[in-house]
Image 1 (cartoon, rainbow, N blue to C red):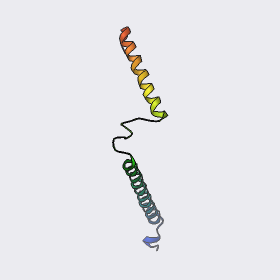
Image 2 (image 1 turned 180 degrees about the vertical axis):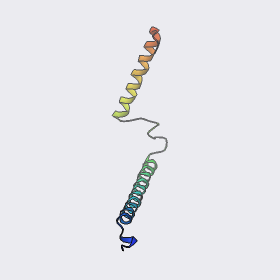
Image 3 (image 1 turned 30 degrees about the vertical axis):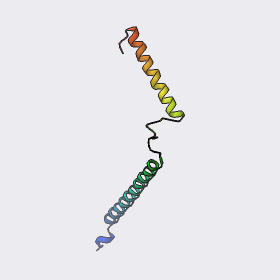
Image 4 (image 1 turned 90 degrees about the vertical axis):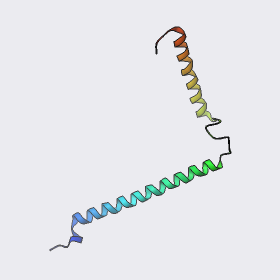
Length: 84
């Protein structure tokens, strides 16, 4: 007679449960680390000069330029009487 603790199904189930618990713990720890990083970034930013107040960088400039081009295209369409 085999004992319940040596049953292959029980060993597999217990192993999977332990691995899920370990992976969940690692994910939660990573999440907390990411939140701490973002908190430090917010604390380090000078008051009144946040990323939303003064956009900077080449990527932001490209996004703003694309937005302006889209607005101009819409205004030209309205001026010529074309439905969008």
